[in-house]
Amino acid sequence: MNQNLADELVTMMTADQRLLQQLFDSGELPLDSYHPRMKALHDQNASRLKEIIGVHGWPGVSLVGEEAAKAAWLVVQHSVSDPEFMDECVSLLEDAVAREDVAGWQLAFLQDRVRTLSGKTQYYGTQFDIDENGWPTPFPIEDSATVNERRARLGLNSLEERQEQMTEQERKRRANVEQAS
Image 1: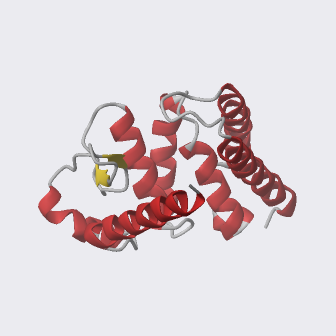
Image 2: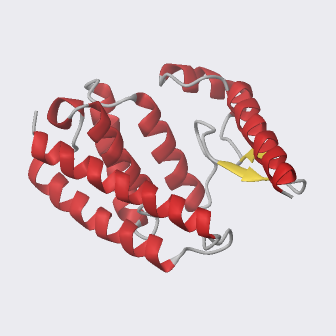
Image 3: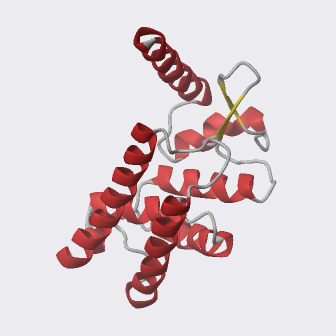
């Protein structure tokens, strides 16, 4: 295992999540646009991940361990200003999943993100929007009748269970907002 690379990837993920939390806590996180500081960090992290991939290939569990492999996924998942890079990483993750070198859910989330950002239907039902009442609802899903079979193959719970989890999170968020008022 490459511990230095693992540490670098985890540091990138930590910085991403820390900035996201800071912007959220300060009220600076806009819902309808991409905060310039967040975009700059995402672009910087994606640039570094491209370098890492160029040298090592996809940084899977065998190279960097489970937490750092998750960090690499998060970096590419947030590199929305470079959809070509995201799409290239879908293929890399497909190979890594086939080798059992990353968790299947990582492929599901990235592939669906790439598809929804390009205006296509998602395949695994991982990407959600907010309906007119503020509740989470999945973006359109290709062949929705068999989505739970696809989700199960990659280790995900059913779409119905996931939607209930997200709805419960929104209920709690609303209750916290109401208590704070």
